[in-house]
Length: 108
Image 1 (tube, rainbow, N blue to C red):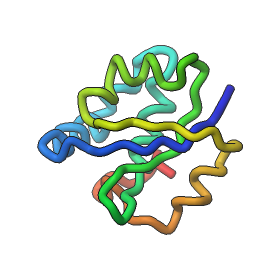
Image 2: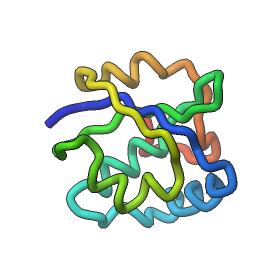
Image 3: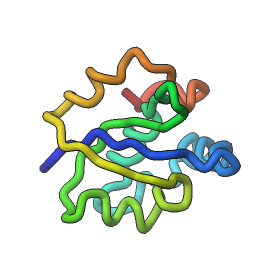
Image 4: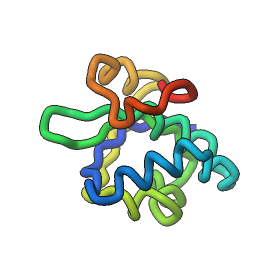
């Protein structure tokens, strides 16, 4: 398993919908990545330029292929990944503001 620091430009017109989907647990049953994706997006942060950033564990090549097809490409543009050690991404972004401050728990 690999871990990635993911950066993406949120589609602002779809963020409220994404927050609602995360709050409802809509992606939890997507196999094999639903729980990890939900946990990661709930903990996503916002960088100064407005990009969303989070750590994601992934087994695919290319990285996040299944997550992009099922969820991410609907809500984000310009997705990039940087390989990091487990929790290495979270430690770099933990002081940034949350993308979804209204969602507590289950996110980093």
